[in-house]
View 1 (tube, helix red, strand yellow):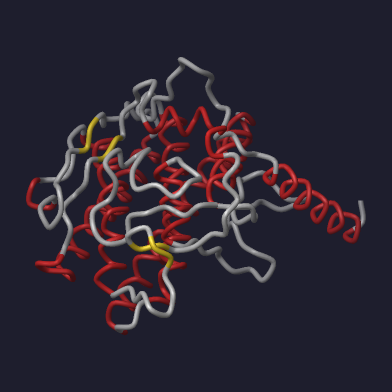
View 2: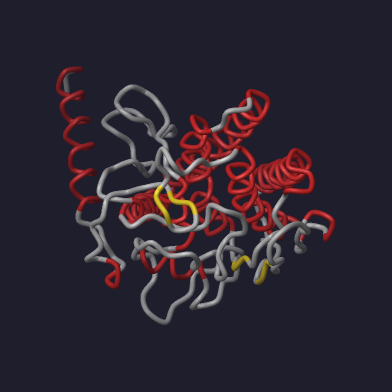
Length: 315
């Protein structure tokens, strides 16, 4: 095939992917919701009269870091974060359902340990930056239960059916798919929040965390891609998860799996300008709450997140 032919093929593949995602709305209860996407604070859209502070943004990020850190730390150690990293304002909850992954591949285990340590330090860093204003860890569901967040996310993506469960700790492939759920969302969350941060010191810190989350995302996607060469179902699973995330955060297409595009890999999910995508806080909460409607709790945060920014977007 000529180079021009491969470019056309790649463009056609991207368009097919977009069309598939536009029709991929698996949450029946929310299918009728079509209001515009908006970042919200306390259920109200952010506008010129509703300011969001740097502390609000960092606390929103801290909630997400609690989730990631607990998942990874449990996966590599069998125990969660220490109690001194969980206190703060708001209602403190527990992280339930986590356990150690029986790693067989020493490289994957080393990667997991590195990410776990990074995410723990993100929690510590944000708590230090926020000092007395830091929110406590909210209730977090990282269980493999049939009605738990991971199983509901996998069911929404069509990876399992009613009554089945998705156990992210059962094996390395499941662990990597679960990590894939979080990492891409983390990158878009920090990218979306960056224009709202006014303090240059905090902005630099957020940029530093964004870079690390992007490293993590690329690492997870690379390992899944390499394993997917031998097990194509893994690549299919990333596409299904990507479609489910896209169905939650709105009608546009800002998510990509790891299926090759033409003759190239797709490790970095970028827009037409080669830039990472952004998500508003409301869109991020749509995904972690597993709900397309404007709600204040659900999914991985059964009682919601702590802080001012806690309502998902109606998408």
